[in-house]
Length: 114
Length: 109
Image (tube, rainbow over all chains, first blue to last red; front, side, top):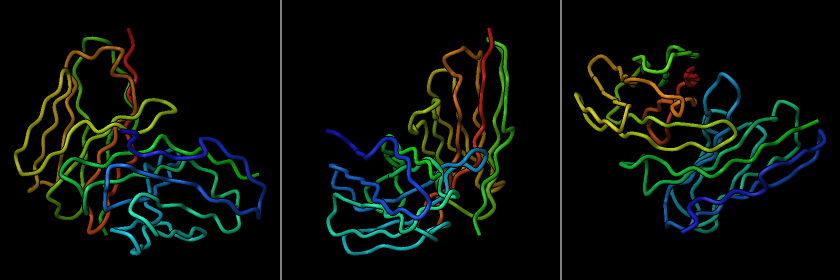
């Protein structure tokens, strides 16, 4: 049981480049979300999905796109990377809506935009 | 808008001492979570508090929830070095979980 798997673990991008952060879970969770973590600011929600084909914006969605074609996968796309997107990104999942058991987090992707 | 505030943000403790981390939130919520994060690692779920007056304990950590005061506490008893980490509280929003800024705890010998 792998839980939530994120790739890559580290990435350096140049300003203006695009890339996709991958997230996959094998727990059949309906709800998946992407957070970014910046020093002193906790975790802020970027986008979330309550099931395949359904996505919505969170607190800080600008500059990011998501899609949810399957229950298992929830990729996060950076359209044109900016230095302000330097952060640690976490994908999380839970059974449905907000969870009795809390969220399961991936190991994170540390992104640097230069 | 749901806001979650933790204090203190930084806490340096001596081993063997007791201390409490506070988590206040701005709107009604039925669930509150505590997570632990070690440096460079992901978040690990510690407690899920589901109702007013809920209290949960695991080892030297005890969490409680007062939904009327919109306050949760994480009490540390007889701290040991292994408890050094960043602790986050989080509260259910309408479709997401809102996090506090985190409390970085350092336990010194």
